Length: 465
Image 1 (cartoon, rainbow, N blue to C red):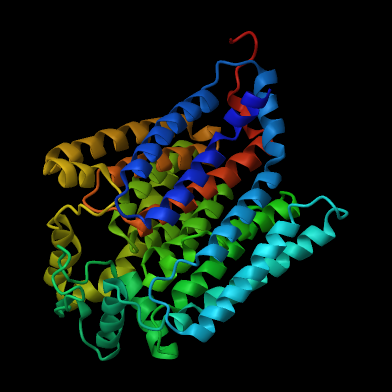
Image 2 (cartoon, helix red, strand yellow; image 1 turned 90 degrees about the vertical axis):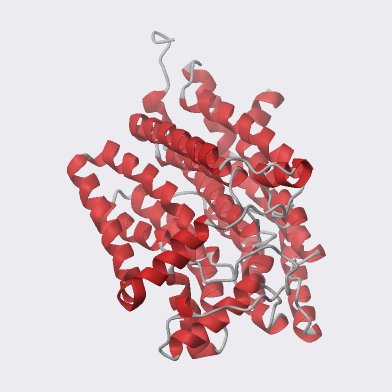
């Protein structure tokens, strides 16, 4: 029975391992964590196969539902662990304003104490627990707002480029035409150009224009994520819903990620909104969300391909085509000003420039391992072939099994993106942070599907087994 429960909760252990790996390595090369993540990915593939293609009796599947009904206890335990990790080390590398650092430390201490109290069973359910969790959420929220004050000028290329690009755009100049300085004085093998899609530049510039700080809307985005998670968890127990929000806000690399001004912070609210639209089968709005997601980072194209197969399977060919064109139109509207401005330089920087980026031996990937220890650069054609094959297999599985619930789509996304990042030229903390949110969405949606017995549609009967 104990081993059955452990196996049932394996995705939570996988989520915890990814969190600890990012907290310790900050997404930089670490062979031990790379091996552990690879092993756990293999186990997750097997877990997904056993769960979504069961050869078990209904009674065993029902036991899995019973186990996951208690998952709000897991959420409180993880919140406590995340809060402890944040209290010990907030993660900001370049924070130097001692006053604001102290204030953040006090607030994180309050959050830690409330997470500890929430583990106890000394109070009557649910009000004291809900009060503790609300205080923890408030303290975390204020802490996030204070990040730019504690770390006003982080020595990181993304923050410098975002600031320069914002100033250029506000002056009416094309930020993709500008030459950006090497902030690392030649210590890293990287090309210093603006290679991001434009949606990040828009939000960076808005923050710079109204608040003098490019990270303002990145921080605001996390509060939108919180609201989105609340919406996505409607119908679940209140403590589970609040706990999921706390897990995201207290994620141990959140402060580090926001300090760096990484673009992925803008992806998060659109991802949650996208998941909610799919859940409600509001396909047109899902296409709008996906169009925005595509314009944050180039690697989000894989999500686009898989989700098209998902919509095609559930809503039919006509709606899938409409979904595709809405996604494409949304992306085009976002990118159109820069295409009109200078389409050649835009394509050169955001597509060709990215393809020419050399492999990085510091990233958390197997590409980095072979480069670092064996001086072998894996063939780009071979890696591309792996991407195509895994994506094709993922599309086939999603198309054939979309009826098993949205959690199946996210399970395939998780597997695919681990493969993409493990074999990518570069894959740092910000890349895996996106995976962390995908895993959280998977956990939330799977629990709800189990709770609503959605899974019963594909669990075989005794006669079938």
